[in-house]
Image 1 (cartoon, rainbow, N blue to C red):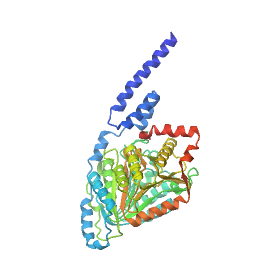
Image 2 (image 1 turned 45 degrees about the horizontal axis):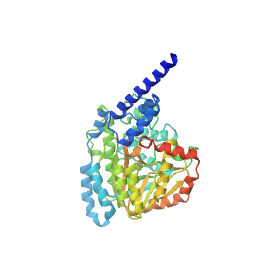
Image 3 (image 1 turned 45 degrees about the vertical axis):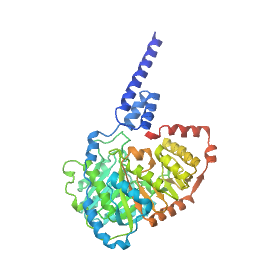
Length: 484
């Protein structure tokens, strides 16, 4: 009798679990691959699967999404004025590459991203030089400092940053910081206390101030941007933390790519920051008068053409993913990709396949170690898929590769926060600079070739010789690709 009751409870639990699983997954709009991935979790891990779904699958409230969607894109008028004046120096401006014309139109339509000319770009590949430059720029700030990072750790470099920002706030400089609560492991109230006491403001992205920790690890603000006085901007892959300086034994040397920009592209970064700020801020912190944050600039610091493109769960267009695909489709000679996570969806993988079959050289570089086990095994799976299609794949052995770079034909490149994975395509808020400048593209290629010297060429035989258990982990991890 007791045994019969036990099995009745088990059967009822499974039936209820199945019904609730269907209701839970289909309650909100999701793509088909994501639906099946979550069904797999909820059905094969009864009860426990719902705890995982609560952490990873719950979405941002419609109210918060509405606040983001309805934010006005600011600064466009000043960018237009600046660019009209700069066209007087048209002889010094670069021509738009033929391979970029359709990409330009795509971003203008999908993200209202304007093309800015005459920008100057500096590349950083190590944390020491990046933070030294950023701190130097912050020290000479006169009017405002705007920072937006996925991760600002409460460690040595994180506190050095906050100390510097506190000093600038005490001097009367406006200081605003947006951090992602999950990426920064909570608010770090004590770390920001001195900044707030000095007049600065630090806020968790789209979260309540009093909420110490968020358990939802999807729909994160993964952007990494900084704007100083509306004249200097930073965008790329570096967060703020000691590990990005190569001080964590687990990862060793941290190989990343970040850029420092001067020129009107900084105003596009400013526009992105202010939209995120006003969607996050409360009461008097909301900025209604923003003209002062978009200074006039009639000179040309450099020659690079840049579009700042952002994407996230607040928009179904997946602008950065579309940009990747447009680049792959436009390539005629070569495609070079550096990414810590290579988990493409079917359309991206098929676009790369078409490029390979069309005779385009495709080179991919991935890390040699995991920072997320399932993600890394899925990356290995798709790396082998790309090798089988005819691509060249390298494993970077000189530390942890966190660089997020795509370059085609030594003409067009993109650097930013977006990885080549479904999470960056659909689940995170990202920002990338799409850069139309052959000299800059050649710089990236030279860095890629230098990295090859510290890399291992992966082949089909390399994967074939792996253990049965390793092959299983790669294939198993691939099943969860839409939610990794």
